[in-house]
Image (cartoon, helix red, strand yellow):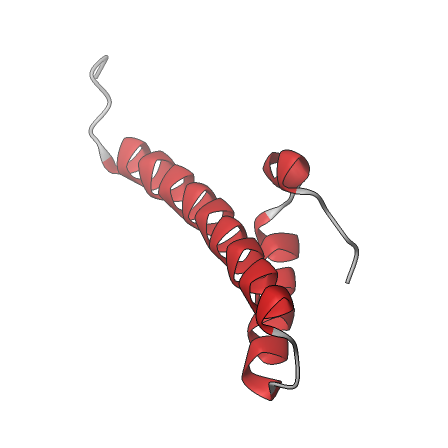
Length: 73
C-alpha cells in the first residue's frame, strides 16, 4: 500500500482509493494497534471513502447525462 497524504487523495483513482480503503479496514479489523494508530487509520479510511464516493457520484452524473434525451434532437 503506497502511503498517500490526505492532500493527495484527489489524485487517487477509484481503484487505488478502494484498494487502500480495504487495507485500512483489514488493519482495523485485525486489531493489535494502539488507540492513536486506530484513530489515524479511521481518519484515513474516512478520507478514502469520501474519495470513492466522489468518483461514484461523478460516474452517476455521467450516466444520468448519457441517459437524458439529446436536447438537439
